[in-house]
Length: 598
Image 1 (spheres, rainbow, N blue to C red):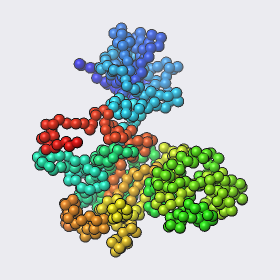
Image 2 (cartoon, rainbow, N blue to C red; image 1 turned 45 degrees about the horizontal axis):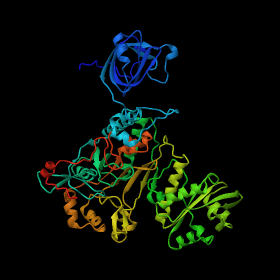
Image 3 (cartoon, rainbow, N blue to C red; image 1 turned 90 degrees about the horizontal axis):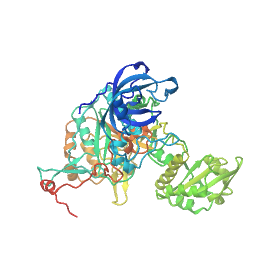
Image 4 (tube, rainbow, N blue to C red; image 1 turned 90 degrees about the vertical axis):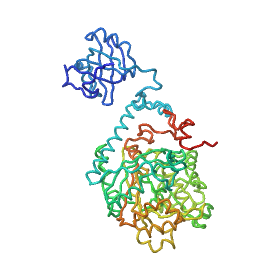
């Protein structure tokens, strides 16, 4: 069918376009009849324009207008005219004009919608349909203003990244999608080879090995907006396929990588949102992040730092505190200002639930009463510390009306559990302003972590991380104290990016393999093509990878990365829209030499 092709976009026309003959294409956002006149709000991704079908319109156009329904795709030819002053809409960019329809062409009809496009509540907030329904009809969900905004923001962020990286002299280089399976922390997605029965490609979990090989190849400034794949158990906000902003640089030290990526984030936020990010970004050692916030990805939009409450073990016979400290553990304390009266026992039990997820035995609490000059502790564990209230309040900086919360256990459990309580409080008390962006670098991570199940050392991040130089002589004798040249960028309680300075020296790399129990022959089989390359003059190098999906999610003020992906999978790694993963016919399996075993 020959159709009337648009001359203008729906969000484009203004009062200066009055009397122009134009053609608009789009979807019917709303249609209503008032006093014999049919008003159509026509929408495309650029905006909405009001169409008027009245006595000035031909009879054919008036007849067609009566049959129109929401989300019909139509073409309208007409003349732009100014609206009467009392009918102008200052809330619409096109609100001072309307199009007097002369011809209407139905390009395609729309069946009954499974959910309304851009339905709003009485307060003006969008009505968001059930997620499974949205994912099944994703092509309709993507028409909503919310999703149009999010996908546009994603495109702008990607462009801002590219423009910045090109301006800094980086090459954008693609790395393979079919690679050799290597151990990188998660399960690989495997692709069977038809030509080589019994052999498989893997989809990359990241371009890690290849970007390091590019450094050996002499491309000292590489970046890529890379698709990555991880076959992980369905939980949280993970996606089997995701996108990284992948960066690697030669002849750099940690400060060089951090400085460049601070500028990158400042540029992206300025270009996309016109938000200024103060530089330099603060740096927090890993140990301090755990001690103060209970996590290596702290939300810094609110203060409320955790404190050491181990001194309280000497102030009473309270068993939980005394036992924890006697067994080499600690007491962690959190002062929640002004919340003593607002938090009931039931609400505190909800906080305790958050602590127990991280294996805490419980959440001790009390409330500060009395006067600041003579405080008392009421409720919870307060009765055990009747004679020590003043000392406790003085050391913790607590005042009348404050709620005090405590965990007591090993340092790892006590910090993580109270950190989870702190995070929950931030959300419950409305302290996490989505329009505020608080960045930090977490640095000086442990190089290794002890695997109690297998009784061995594991790499805390990955095996190619450079240990900080002061630890090179004690790598084997004291792995637990070694700090890696690692760094994470965190934003509003999320890990936004992770990176490290890499190991370019084959001998040092083998020492790391040995410490984590990775046999030389296994290393040669899995990584020989990389470690072999390092024997040919590998330069010092380092890099970082940002989660693009997570970055855009935070910028858009969303709570799920699925809301910034065009076609995501659900929490079970399935697509309700195309019903993947799906079975394939026996002939395909036979050609690939694959047999399904129950």
